[in-house]
Image (cartoon, rainbow, N blue to C red):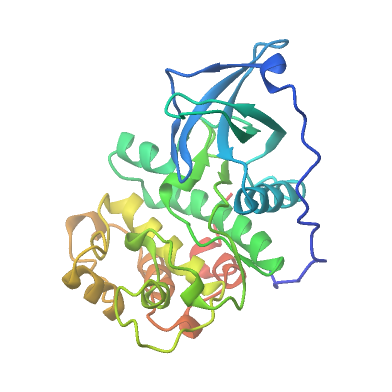
Length: 297
């Protein structure tokens, strides 16, 4: 699979509706998870009774960009969490001192996120991991073809259903390829690539900033694959000097019993994804064409 760049999507904030509370009822006491912007709520359609995931964003320029990118991408790929509707309302949330303008993003509801599923399964088998990762790679291939970097690939942002069908969610940190890494200081350290940690001033604030590439998403997916199979992070949480040093050195160990029955092809893919130099990591398309992916249904 070659990376064919598609025409630049129209990242224009969609024309919103303003009757959210006429169409939906929100279960404020329940939440499906927590995103960058806060809890993901459950919205009940007043006509069909169907339940959806609900993301509530303060109406800002950044939030509108996030929604615009998400809507554009999900229109052209089933591997992106599907947006059902976008609404804007002036509303006062529980902790607000006064009403604010909010964006209510209604999304198709998934069964659970990948971190919950991996814990439920007490670690994923190689075959299940391969099926899931293949679909994430297809999503990343699609995102990268638009010249974008997701910049927050992690198990919490990978959603699955009962058949292990996968979608990628949360586009709050998305950037264009070639962005200066120093502009990209927001990250989840445990899943962040070495070049992103440099930009976040966690290593050397005087270092010349690099330009972000799609390979940072490949690193994050490599950490994710390691984590869901072994139920531990390969380099720790990336919050201490020692843990950051491990990320920068990119030394991966497969010595634990978890890995004894895992194929060498799988370990090779993980090691390739976790190369410290971005130029040495394979693309999403190259991993999809690897020997390890040959037998995925």
